[in-house]
Image (cartoon, rainbow, N blue to C red; front, side, top):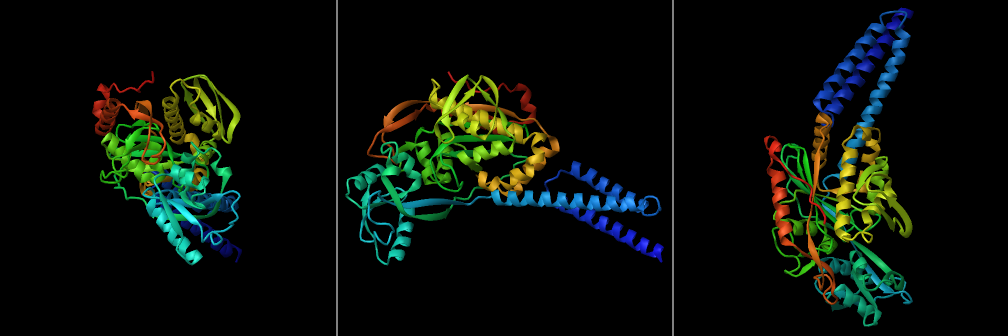
Length: 500
């Protein structure tokens, strides 16, 4: 009787391990995350463990030990399956972004008696005549339903004259996209303490679709947008970092092209239609109208196609670097940054050469420009150094222990239009060949001037007038990386641009 029970238990243990092993291998294989060269050893190991289990159950001396090992093996497989499941769920969340969120606020002066929008239903509301009008109209439609009447509105040409009207009491309230606030603060430095928000309205809209490409066999361009806010990543805001990553997965080359935030260019929509009616604006202001406006403007500037975008902000940069366990970033100069993560007062020292940085120090490194003779150009170069540092860490085996946690947090850290399947295929490719990538830089040049812009028409702002010769040279470099084949590498003399 004991022998029969023992055999039944042994059979159950063997079947259990067989089922868990098969399910684990099939699950991992179907995700596409693990390359074939890893799947074959995994299957072989699982088979050998199962053979050992069968043999151990045939002898009186080892069957108990074999059963314990079976429990351990099953636990390991189940934990591994959950790790893969969480990783894939995270990729699903972060990939394929198709929407943007505009936060429209109703501002009154701080001492205004109205506490809610209903209290202000008889006020005159200042609105922008043309800029961001679609979002303003949607917000007003919601407000009209809420207060039970149509709000009285007065139109103004740009955010500055709109705010002027509020301060001058021409209107009692203004309706303004929060992404304009930092631009308004260039003139009204105390705007946020002088005013308060009665209410906000979140307007969600579709981002223009982007055509997918095979990212493991064909070169592609990615627009990397760094927006100047903390918190949620899907909110529209000025884009202070504007980098195009040109990726050739065949030659393993990446060209990072930085364009100054103040570049003075017309804004565009998909298909080359001018969003600003041909009126130039700061490139950073394109982000106010959505990531697709920034992307399309850069496409027109460099006469290229951009396949995907990635958006990050202050919060996400800090999180990414900390979850990676810090990164080694290169500095071109010795300098002290007084740009603290929460404002002035925090000082970080950087030496020429490589510096180990955590999230806070990485953000200070990327934000500093006042201590450089070439100001925003050097800041653009430091953004490129930071991206290279992050890419080097992400593509190294040292990231694997934190890989699942990194992916779990990825939805709050960045937003991308690249689909989950494309991200998985890139991960699979890198795991398969563990290739070292060659990363080079290009920086657009220009000269400073004071000009009115599409977004701010009443006040002259500092802008950077493009040097179109430098733009043409960059376009050639982008096309060279895109069209290069492995056999061309021996004759390549591509080097980083230098900043004089």
